[in-house]
Image (cartoon, rainbow, N blue to C red):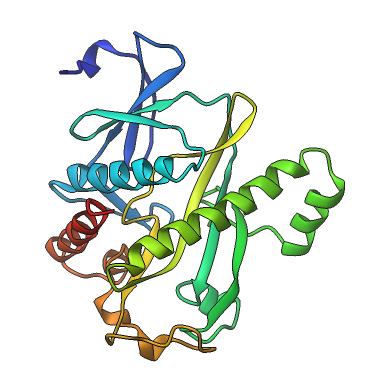
Length: 261
């Protein structure tokens, strides 16, 4: 199949993808990956040649793996390189749902956490998607109140449950390759009235730290010494200013791993 996107209606273009209407099926849309990479809520922006193909491979492999595990997702298939066919949303939930196993990134500043602290059970937080406001986090207590007492609270409860489920599935998958899934952020929408995983899951969606030794003890209060944080395989390489070719190399390593899921 060769898709002609010039003949299709563009629904929306984001920082890393373009969504096109599917003229043959109003219940699905095409998601075309771009070579762009951003950080700092869009303040930092570059183009990495070949990134679209690498992200598409990672996204394809992860979504097909999640589908095989019974996770409810929008992903249907990948009809050609750099393109995913996905179910059309009834409603997009304007939240990022972040789940953490290990303290890293922004939580070290605003949460006063020690890097490498292990969370068991997992910690899940909801962030309102708004770049100018830097995706502010919803208060955990208020989220609990929404779930308990507000109309629509079951949607928050289901997103929290699904994030937990997906994290455990992917944590186990990456562990087979001696890599710790540190944290990730996912997005959801409603399809046929059901909360459904949407968007993409690529190198920009999570932190991945390789094991620092053959049989690490990953059940300590702090596991930083058990992991190779400097060998990270995620977008932090871009955030921290590494050469773009090195960023692409790390993303390619992720794709080589996920193709073996």
